[in-house]
Image (tube, rainbow, N blue to C red; front, top):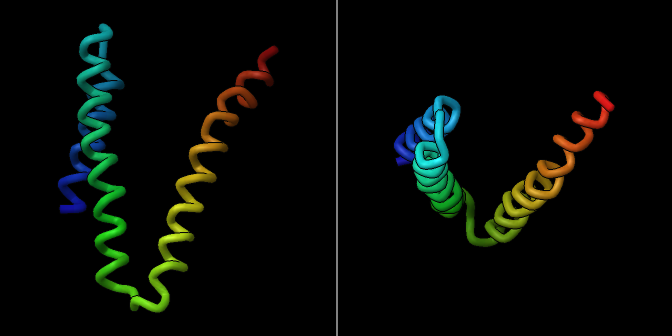
Length: 86
């Protein structure tokens, strides 16, 4: 299932990269969203399967912290990389 989610995400990325108009870009982002949602959900399923109940909260907190840091810093990086050209 994880490989299927990764395949959807990768296919959506390729569709977006090759898009020549907005409609194809929307389709690619939709396919990416399906894959990304599968990756998020299956990550929690895998952690639930592998980690004991006592330590599960710590692992869920670490995973959520990684998503939060990635969401916040992901928006700052393009601005910083573009500022070197001005």
